[in-house]
Length: 110
Image (cartoon, rainbow, N blue to C red; front, side, top):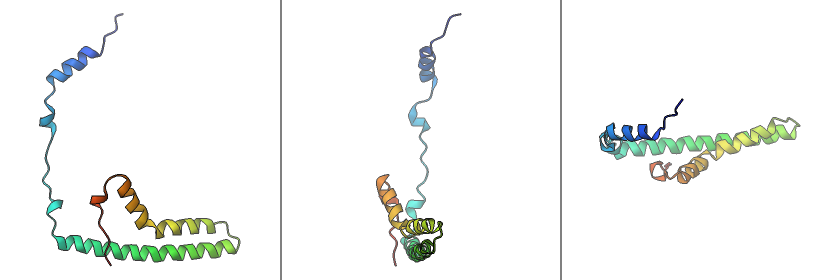
């Protein structure tokens, strides 16, 4: 039995497929037209959320250290979770910067 090559099929598919320009759809940029008051409101809400998260993280670290001092093995996880919660803002800012999306991040305001 004779094997068929895939190259002629690919060449035919490239001839009958529409050009790439037809596949590009442009969506209206609704989010680019958001008023600055809405952006400022989100920044203040984000700042409040980060303040509460930082305080909650510090409390978790203290609780984990207290449990660890009493001999509970789960105290280590309390410390780790507190560090992650308290440093969530810095972790997310670093992730946005690493992946090149730093322009899309809002700066929290207090």
